[in-house]
Image (cartoon, rainbow, N blue to C red; front, side, top):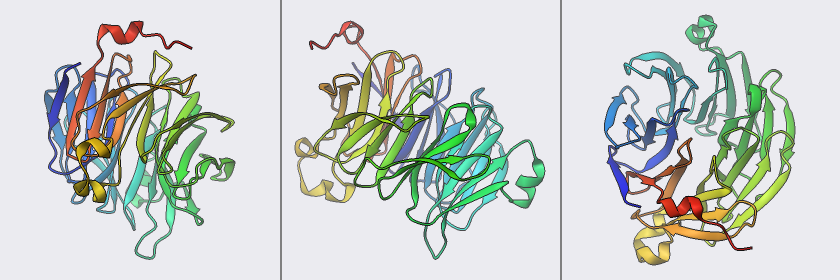
Length: 325
């Protein structure tokens, strides 16, 4: 399993995202540039230039027309995927931490940080209404008073957003009324990442409490727990196998004081049903900040604190592998 190494960032990777077909891979980092790559050979297709601060999040709509990025320069930007042209600029009062298109690609949500005296807000914009973009007026803005949102994804059918908070809570926010529909408090510490399965029925949350947990998207019922001995920065569900990949490692600031072996910078594979670890992939020289499965399940990518994105294509043995119960 030889990885393809993507070098396009000078700072640590914050998020990577495949489009729906999986032919493109988007990466953003703590530098102001968003990159898009061909996932088959790791060739860089282009960049989206315009941000002036670290870019925290990226998303692409289902037909790969538009790209959405949220940044610490207090803005959320909409780009034309093909040309790299900036279509819209939504300014905020604090850094944009998460962003996402709903299933139709018509409605976007993004959350802002609680900082500089400003509240954490979850904002919804309808892209079909140019007035909202012009006036920078979301049709719905939900304040989150208790604990700020650290990660969020759209639920099935675009009816609600599932958000993970700094205190370990997971909430469903309705996209119509903004009220909290359901809440789950399974994690004890901050949620670093939430990703949904390919059919949007399940989601996996990665937390600082050294676990990743699987939930049902609609009922937020807790299904599985995957335990490690290091904070989990990101986790993803395989679209074709009952597998989960997790990336993590110790806090970035403690890395320099330990050897790479102790840091546990491997990507770890768990069986989704048995909750047992069956494989590890080494490679990064620092914690893994983000992992993502290719939509066809035949490869996965990881982005690390070292600024590299690595695309791994699975060997044929991987697909024949059965876990002995």
